[in-house]
Amino acid sequence: MTKKDTAKRVALVTGGVGGIGSAICKELATKGFKVIAGYHPAEEQTAQERLKEWKREGLDADIASGDVSSFSSCAESAKKILDKYGHVDVLVNCAGITRDKTLRKMSEDEWQSVLNVDLNSLFNVTKQFIDGMSDRGFGRIVNISSVNGKKGQFGQTNYSAAKAGVHGFTMALAQEVARKGVTVNSVSPGYVETAMTKAIPPEISKQIVSQIPLNRMAQPDEIAYVVSFLCDDRAGYITGTNISVNGGLFISF
Image 1 (cartoon, rainbow, N blue to C red):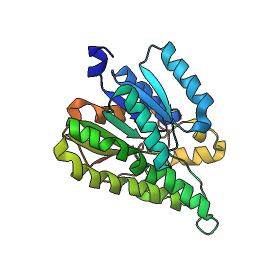
Image 2: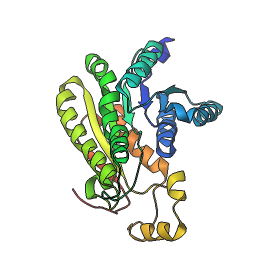
Image 3: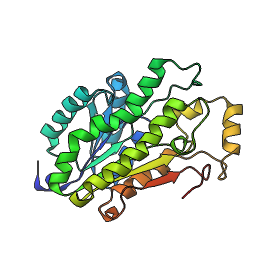
């Protein structure tokens, strides 16, 4: 690595090839970060396509495979990343899934799988890099939660519980590492225009949008902008907080 490369901030984004995750990767890369997009092994083709796209655009990006719901997989993936790049300065925990059903109809697997990916992953991934950030005296951790982690949502006891847990994790860890120069914050998007929301039947989508004061869904790059703000060196006095990006769907302080 050249001296210039060594000085560059390295950012890892889990769920980095999804709709919101890929927008975050692109935003951070355009801001001068070396970006690594984490992805599940089942997303190999998508990940390779994303990487080609970013390379064509001249972005400094890479990809890393791993299962965020598995501690051992995260440890293995982290070792490869650290062996290759030496350090990770910024971690964005963005990986997430949904398995929507009312609690009465929800299976144990549908409960556990969402908790494992959306909440337990924060421990599995962050644990691999928190010591390095603390030792170097700098770190930015941004955890992607959801508006439904604040207000709850019918048919999403698993998802709402996991995303509410993200807030608790964020506030507690922020206190543990503040004196080490590491900030920990969360971002709570509302409805975002991704492939997943585009698949919602038009009549249902229209009902959702009608409840949003801004009368539209967010664009992925609007979420990415807020994440990049929290990752900036100048955001060093913001920690343990949550920023809502929901178009006014749920307003609180």
